[in-house]
Amino acid sequence: MHVLVSGGAGYIGSHTVVQLVAAGHAVTVVDSFANAKPSVIARLNILTGEPIDVRSFDLTDRDKTEHLFAHEHFDAVIHFAGFKAVGESVEKPLEYYENNLESTFSLVRAMRRHGVRRLVFSSSATVYGADAEVPMKEDAPTSATNPYGWTKVMVEQVLRDVGAADPTWRIALLRYFNPVGAHSSGLVGEDPSDIPNNLMPFLAQVAVGRREKLSIYGGDYPTPDGTGVRDYIHVEDLAAGHIAALEKLASADEPVSTWNLGTGRGTSVLEMLHAFERAVGHDLPHEIVDRRPGDIAQSYADPTKAETELGWKATRTIDDMCVDTWRWQSTNPDGYP
Figure 1 (cartoon, one colour):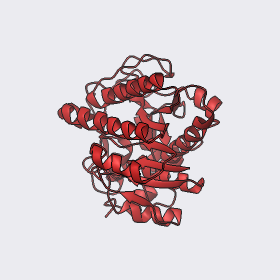
Figure 2 (cartoon, rainbow, N blue to C red):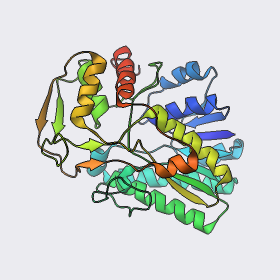
Figure 3 (tube, one colour):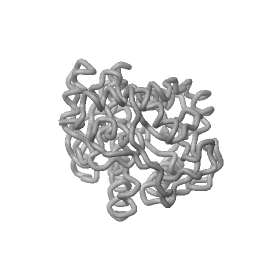
Figure 4 (cartoon, rainbow, N blue to C red):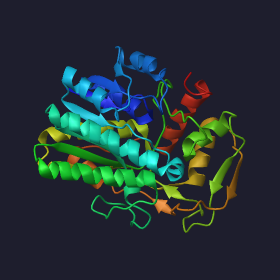
């Protein structure tokens, strides 16, 4: 298949591009490079052994999106593109709603006009909101606690309505939990453009000397060690889940399918800290501070549906995640050039 990967230069997108090419698919990347570095493309060329076709523009530009579809034939689209920082979404809600919704509208319109009906959408476990029972299942009610999360809830609803209006569509909504890790080569990994919002890249920057210490938000949660529990999934397992979903859509019975991509196991912040210390080989400075507003005690997936229907299962351990992250960060202390 010829697959268009929006946001294909980003953290999850870049790892998925490598696996798509390895699976025999032709790939075109479209990325505005608002949240990614152009230098990642040269590394993708090395890892895939071929030059990646890249188009640099913003999907909110309807004319450029239409021009791309008018001049290329795509069999399917994997849609990663979008703003993704929870905290920033609270500060800039209009920008998040405008970018994340309008880019999807522009993309789906172009797909519809040119007969491309296979789409894998990068959703998130944030759609389960603050009150969902764990382990979280796909049939749980959706909600959100921040504008970023609401954009995922809204896009999911838009795509369900598109599928209901035209049952020839085959759409996968992939709700994944906490992506971490890096490619085993150390060539591609997570490179936040500002202060990291997530645990693993912050830990990595503390370990490499870019940050003074790790602040652990909350040590009095009703969890085994008092710190928050999350379902961390290796980005390589996550990328494999996208390939499995893409291939499953060819035989899917329904226009829209939803799958969790997670390990089904919860890991606390302190457990992750100690695993990273094992990878680095020494203790890391940290302190426990007050909880952050909106954070919940625990979140982890029920991945049974993906295992049953996609034949996919996360296999990498927390130690694998930490070792691969440290290899990436220690060989790229300042991230991508």
